[in-house]
Length: 93
Figure (cartoon, rainbow, N blue to C red):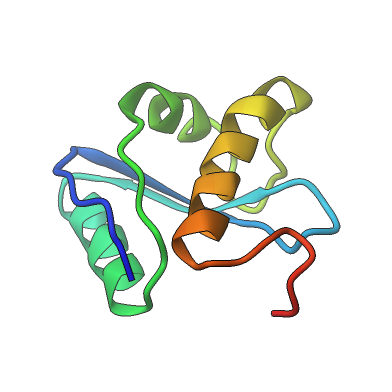
């Protein structure tokens, strides 16, 4: 599986079930960011370096859905993840 590698001081994890808006499930700086990235890599979760978007997403409380204003930017990330996994939005999980 293709992966995007990058180094950053900030990482934000999103969960998307296809039925509701994506939710912020983890965020961290420094060592916490490195751990989030390492866990994503271990579980085959696609990574994308988007420092500006990560900074905005990091302001959303954990467990909260992203605001509508961010749908387009996050949809591009989700589409990228689907592409990396060879899936379409309506593929079985």
